[in-house]
Image 1 (cartoon, protein in one colour):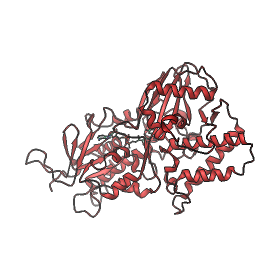
Image 2 (tube, helix red, strand yellow):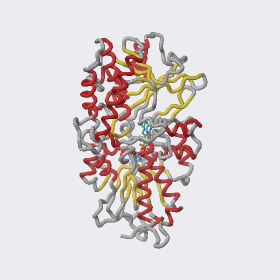
Image 3 (tube, protein in one colour):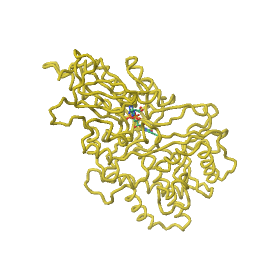
Length: 509
Ligand SMILES: Cc1cc2nc3c(=O)[nH]c(=O)nc-3n(C[C@H](O)[C@H](O)[C@H](O)COP(=O)(O)OP(=O)(O)OC[C@H]3O[C@@H](n4cnc5c(N)ncnc54)[C@H](O)[C@@H]3O)c2cc1C
């Protein structure tokens, strides 16, 4: 089969999120001349998406650099492009290990409008944190006392709290706090319930040191900086890919032209021939179009892993206020529903009770310059249902909750705005997690290039990147970026073999 060799290879990247951009940058900087990105939407960045709200910027998608320290490539890039403030870049900030959770001290309110004191909040949150840490320790041990993190946490919480000597009222409040913490974990994992998150593989997610930080100019400032490094015109926007036809011998137009093993068929009828295609679409998108996105279809073990792995929704509801009703030092307002003493992180009636899945609000901005903005967090099917409601309905429900918990009937947001990641046609949710019955070999399967090893066909026709293909940093921007680099490196090693005696010349570029 004639084909483009070496740096002349035609490479198509499907998706212009951070993994696709990262792959394109590595390939073009390495000297590949024919790299193209096909992006379904009208913008770059995918799940990195910032917008103005109030007088400042809010993040519709990714919020923090998790673990901003030297090992984190997103942190390194952000520093290189001078996108962070001095505190975030300081050695002290990088040295602190917070174990994956932003070190916020929440202020808890109960559904009867009481502010809960540290004597109630601290024992509950300490118990939760220590059990959550224990739940990560089953990874690699082959021992899994329960299938899910949720079941393990609930059983252990019941066991430990049985020994508490509190009066009934105090115990009820502590249990309500523990329910809220389960809901917070649902938001962190992007899962409907912690009962869906696999226990044995939970510890596969690795954290990096550094206190999580944000981008003063928006996460998207990183995307803009990265895009400047790409050749002009490399991205075709508003060009959804319908199907990747691989393992063929496609001749574009002229008989004199070479043949290509892959052609990418776009929704608009455009056909793009390629030697290699890097697919970076979300796991949510792959789940929906698993049967039709590739022709020949995905090998069964890959399709099964795509089905098995978890991909859920986490949304944000931004509220702008004329004046803050919270203390200047407050970072998080957490909600404890007093009737939730039986530990539940999924509501029995999504339509009626969706708002109970909100675990609380982070304070986004609270100053005269940027305005007073809270961000409510909601995961799961409740979050997906929330996307279907009108702005007025969401505003009314969330205002009612705030008035009830804070005990102030005058609280009225000026403006409400929310993300809708589940109904986003090209994302279909927020991020991936390892669900019950899954292991990191499912992640390996999803990331495995086609054709599979052992085939006589030309290797690396279709490669897979994106956050869901990183074995320890799935669900993050750094996992996504590293996965894009990984696939670019695969093509670099394949297409530009080392010259004997010189090592891989290109790798030194
Ligand atoms: C609410 C929310 C909060 C988050 N918070 C954080 C955080 O604080 N820290 C963190 O590290 N991570 C966070 N994440 C996760 C992070 O945003 C993602 O892991 C990362 O951005 C994924 O990048 P990606 O390149 O893998 O995928 P994407 O960004 O989804 O890029 C894929 C691209 O493919 C395009 N596409 C899809 N289908 C097609 C098609 N058929 N044809 C062509 N193009 C297509 C999409 O439009 C998209 O642009 C958050 C995500 C969400 C949603």
